[in-house]
Length: 381
Image (cartoon, rainbow, N blue to C red):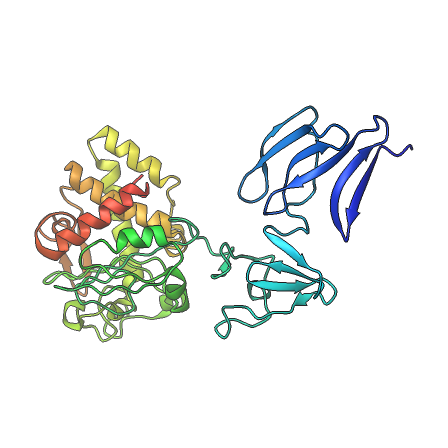
């Protein structure tokens, strides 16, 4: 088979190509990232092909005869974007660090050290994780999808529990300036009485997507905890409910931590109540919109629990759906949940909906602001 093309390189960097049959020689003109932006005829000096790339190297636009059939195999001169080779040290400069191709290792310390290993990369899990900006490793096996690359859980409490993602106090706010999604964070931080904490911090504390609120007379909790919490039971009656570990109502405990024993069952019950109310909604437009936003809906309590425990976006949509029901007038009555021998209609209009844009004070302000954020980022469906 006759040779069709020759490629020219210097110290491993491809500089151009020569077509044997036509005799044409093309030189590669690269941008600052090392991507081939133009090919130039070495005899005439004319531009033969032009390319525009997407952020991660995929060709977006190509012009010139035969441009779309050409392959450059990798982005960047050396297989990395925005890199240069340091000839004195025989290393590749990759933004913050130098990589030695001879040693097959980083030869300069990670700027995140000592919080990260000085010469590691992606926690040594480059096939199972992603690191979008070089500052935060995300495990791709964790199903998170809210805004950007991080799922942001929501917890609202009147007590200002320190481990909540959003913590609502009675008259003050404290920002926990963590997390990667700065755009969403900046939106959240404009809200009154709400504090911020990132998803990774919650993950480290073995907490899942959580939404909780305490009422004065009729306390309830809508949240999930770590899967290991499912085996824990109320010591008073052996039933997993929304009481604390000692059988004391949450309103007398004052923090979300007291809900960690029994909140999962209540969450499933609450989710079923909300879903039932959506199905019964007389407004066809609202009903259809909410059902589409939550599709597919888990068919059993076990699947529903799994969905609530792993899919943060879906949990947020469910809570946002409740807000839509209240606003549209479809949330007339949610039903009853039994707790320790008594039946409490804790989802009735005069209790639950009042904190979702019904009422006054910090509850109303925080909830309205939160709802506007959910709506802005299309979490409401």
